[in-house]
Length: 89
Image (cartoon, rainbow, N blue to C red):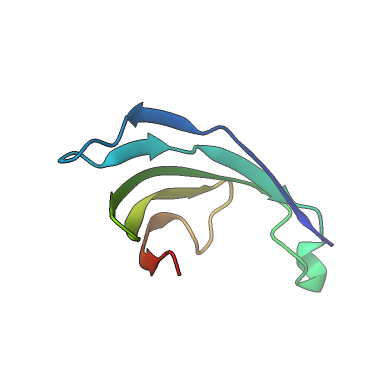
């Protein structure tokens, strides 16, 4: 079974020489599998993230985090964070 998610990307600040790009991609989703068969939670989930991105020549760094929301009392509700740096080869 699959998880379906729907989100909308908002960019609040455009990247300049000194300021990173700042955006948000709030999303909601639900797994379509049966929680009894360990194929998903069977409940609505959401994520409220903020992302930053800054480029210097061939290098781009981005990262961010946010708050994950589950519509059931269980693990997975809380803060989530990630970061990456890549080179355009």
